[in-house]
Image (cartoon, rainbow, N blue to C red):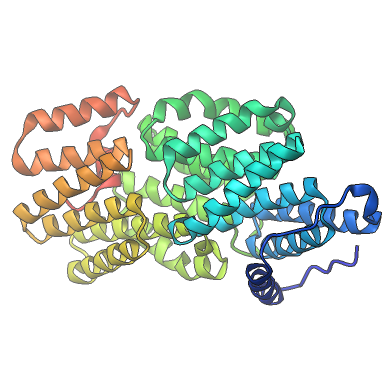
Amino acid sequence: MGLRLPRTSLPSLWSILWRRAFLRLRGLRFRERPAGQISPETLLRIDACASATLGLGVSDPIHALDFHARGLMLALRAGEPVRIARALAVDVGVLGAGGTRTWRRTNQVREMALSLAARTGDDFAQYMATAQSGIARQFAGRWAEALEDCERAESLGPEFRTRSSEDVYARLIATLYCWYYTGDIPRIAERLPELLKNVQERGDLVSDTGLRARFLPVLLLAQDNPEQARHEVRDAISRWTRQAFYFQHYFSLVGETEGDLYVGAVEPAWERLTGAWRALGAGHIFLVQFLLLEALHLRARVALALAASGHESPRLVRQALADARRMEREQAPWSDALALLVRAGVASLQGHRSSAVELLAQAESALEAAQMSLYLAVAQCRRGELTGDRKLVEAANQFMHNHQIRNPARMAGMLAPGF
C-alpha cells in the first residue's frame, strides 16, 4: 500500500504532530463522494490504515495514532462518507485519551461521528461511534454515561459483540473500569468469567492478557484470594513480549502492585513501581490521562503504605503529596476525589486527626458526586475509625460485604493506606 511502518516511535511522533496540527487547521469538512467515484487504490489505503490503527491500538499507541492520522486525512480527502464516519468514530477515542484536558474537542467530534454514522446507516460505523463514545467518557470519569454507551454498543449487533477484535477489547476494558470505579464488583463477578472463557476459546492473547492482568486480580482480591490474584497476573504477562513496554505491562504492573498492597508487602510494591516508572513514560502510557491519574494514585498509595510502616516517612509523604498535587492539576473530578483521600492519609500519618477527618469528609462528598461508591465506603470507614464512630464503620463494611468484598479491612488498606 506504500504505507511505511517506522522502526522506532520517533518518526511516528513527528508524523502525528504535524498531521494533527494540519487537521486542526483544515478542520473536518469534506466534499461527499460515493465510493464508485474514488479509485480502489485510495479506498484500500484508507482501509489499510484503519486496520493498522485497530490492530496496533491496544499495544503500540504511537504507531496506531500515526496510522489513524494518516487514514483520517486520506478519508476526508476522498470524501467517502462511510469511511469518514468510521475514522471519526476512532478519532473520538483518540481525542478522548486526553480525558478532561480534551473533553470539549472530544465531545464535538463525538457528536459529529454519531450523527454521520447514523446518516450513513452503516452498522459498523454506528457500533464504533457508540463504543468509542463510551471509551472517551470512561477516560473522562463519566462512568454512568460511559456504561450507557458501552451497553448500547454491545446491543447493536452480535457480530461486533463476539468477534476477536481490538475495538471490542477496548470497549470491554472501558466497561470493566467503570464497574470497578463505581464499586460494582458483583457485575465484574458476573461477566468476567464468561468474557475470559470466550477470549481463551478464541486464542485471543491480547484480550486474555489484559483481562487477567488487570481485572481478574480485582475480583480475586475482593474474594480475599491475593495469592491467586498475583499468580494470575504473572502467568498472564509471562506470555507477552519483553522487548518493549506496552499497555499489557502496565496492567500487570497495577495488578501485581495492588496485590502486594493488599497483603502488606509494601517494599516489593514500591521497588516494582518506582523501577517501572521511567518505562511507563517511555512506553507512552501516560498519553492516556486516565492511566496517568491511576498510576499517580497507585504510587501515592504505595508511598503512604510504606511510610506507615516506618520507612523514610518524610520523603515518602512528600512523594504522596507531590502525586496528589499532580493529580489535581489535571482537573478531573474523579481523581480530585482520590487526591483528597491521599491528603487525608498524609494528615493521619502526621498525627493531624482533625485535618484528616475534615479531608475525609470532603473526599466523601467528591466521591459521591463522582459516583465512586466503593471508594466512598472506604473513606467513610476511615473517618469512622478516626472519630470512633462504630456505626459508620459497620455501615461501610456492610456495603462492602453486600458488594462481594469478603475482607473490608484489607480492601481499605489497599485503597486508602496511611491510617
